[in-house]
Length: 125
Image (tube, rainbow, N blue to C red; front, side, top):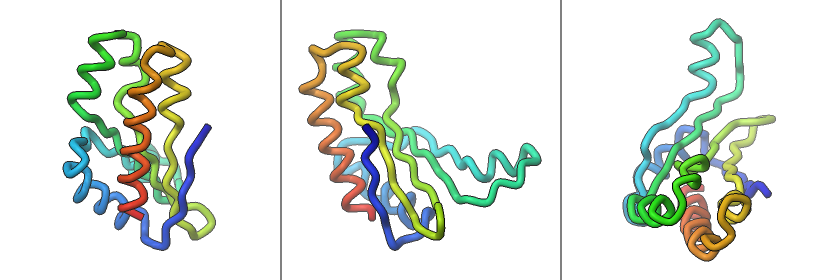
């Protein structure tokens, strides 16, 4: 499942807002992948703005990894912010489903983390 929200803000405005507020939720941005910029630098004339934020909560990461190192395969969490047909869209994959596929015992924690990520997105858009 993918959660998708629309915003009247630009891609950059949403990315900037996420960076501004994320620490209040005890998360941090580890890296931002600027997909358009990367593809353009490789000679591909990609038109749509698209930035993917790698986000993480150190306490959640420690909890997940202490219980099951294979959960590292879905870390860090990603928030995709992109422009399509003139609209800004924010999307995340369901963390609950991703965790459930690997370790169903950890889905309660994943549910809480997912709620927090959705709050971050709601505030940012």
